[in-house]
Amino acid sequence: MLRFLSLLLAIIIAAAPAEARRKKPPVLEDNKAYILYLEGCPICEQALEYVNERYFTRPDVVKVNIETEEGQALLKQCAKKFNFKTIVVPVICMGDKTFMGWSGKAAKDFDKYLVELHE
Image 1 (cartoon, rainbow, N blue to C red):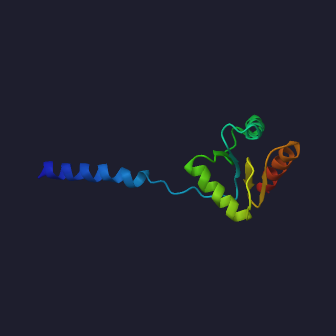
Image 2 (cartoon, one colour):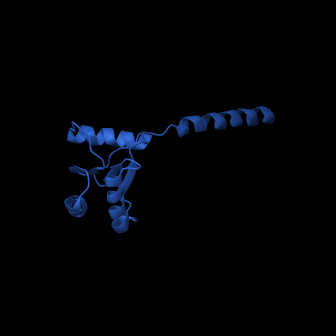
């Protein structure tokens, strides 16, 4: 009987991880800044370099590659939220603000919006 229960428990435990491994899709949180980038994109690399130099340890600044499942899910949510017709990477989604691409103005806007995000 003990052997049977052990075997049954082992089967239940083995089956459970398959269900647990199915991740829930990520949710775009209003209190975080998302940098949605494309690997190998030179403009994205500039944005990531800027963000990493200033905000590397901030848990509210999330960098996600749009070629991953998580990145695709977040990009779709951001596109729906802001009614995008086209997309230019990197895409920055922060609360009720968004912008695409990267430049000196984008860097200043990012800094400003990040402060506003927590006011």
